[in-house]
Image 1 (cartoon, rainbow, N blue to C red):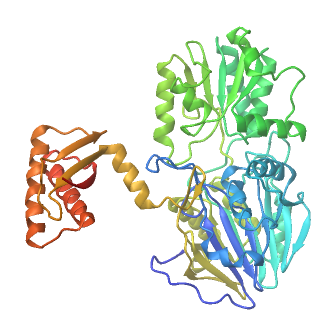
Image 2 (tube, rainbow, N blue to C red):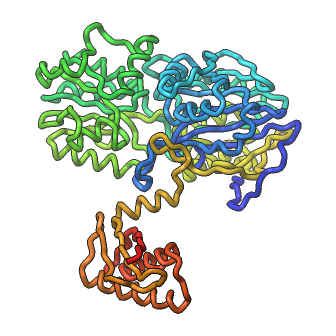
Image 3 (cartoon, helix red, strand yellow):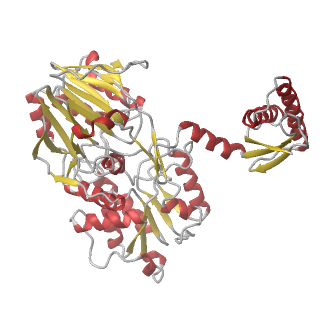
Length: 561
């Protein structure tokens, strides 16, 4: 495997006869998938998703790809191609379209429907191009072919990109379920045809590359899910992604079989299931789905609730139920079914919610204790199968953390791809495909871009460091009344605590440290209020770190006596 060095410089100009590939998200992480292809001076964007924040990123709503490297070239973008409708593939599109609203967006029916509903909230009227598996679509110098792939959401597509520089296949997220709920198989015949044509570069999903063998089929989950509904004396509360149509269909079927009415809880869940139902991707027996308010008049064993929050998101419905801040009150006899895999980084949040729900009396069923979920990503056996069909000249694993990328690269090598042709990259690393050879040539800007409420990109790592410090040790404000024009204290220091607790001895030590620091300032003839505030804050912070082993955020305010 050829791993991208850490100290890459900016890339040279794109080769005139080549194809440049620049991932701006989704490599080295699970989420915010986005890849930019460049040929003959034109750009093609495949996916534009978001990453959900971890516990160490307080106050952040979502994290976007970094658009910096293409901001000056928005007019060169021919289209945004979407492989499927999950948030980690479409959630960033509104933010890119805000910079140029008329970029054509290409995708399947359900994907575009989910995206359109999001864009309404952002006040954007998009230019949409709907495609189906088997369609071909030309935009600028890019000739696109769309191929059906099976995933945990209907209408998933892989995209083959043909240019004068060669043939590339981007799999998107996929698996090879041989008995999918919707009967839509990953089109291995099309994969084989691409292999016969000669595949120059394969960008392939890595999420499950470490897991040996083949995934079980979604149809094998039916009996375990049915058992939950048959044995639960109270309500069944199912938590899932708002786009996981397949799992929700299984929930509806089980509810109908056991005489339960179903209510969707949460704005995104209600919206997406309405769209899926209207487009025919969700089959709902007449009278099965009712408003949540009507479930209050039913016996608990006649009720199913379907909500969001399977990843422990703090503002999602399930987390608020666990914290008893939601109108749905979990109680003895209820069963909570978590119908999603754990996304890396979310484990502590999810297990915290499981414990809270258990403490409220619920029986919590999840992938760890019952066969109620199967991943939507190809495991090692499935990936090897695809490598042997496609026989790519070059491989670039995508969609995964470093361990997933390397595991995927090792699989490619085992199937005969030369080690030098297996590229392990990172977000921002630039790859050029020239004359059938893919090589790493540089790196562009690739920071995390944080969305905090209505602000985009204003929050930095320093901001988050301050928030973490505030959450860990609080804030201590020091009021210093100084003799006018000097660095001499006119009165004893005053301390105002907020989330910060310190004994009197620690504060006395801090005061002595400030007096010493101000004496030094007097000798150095320092009288600037701003400089004195910094001197005082540093003295207090150092003293408290020594005496109390706590490092609150210290804010000094200097006033004339």
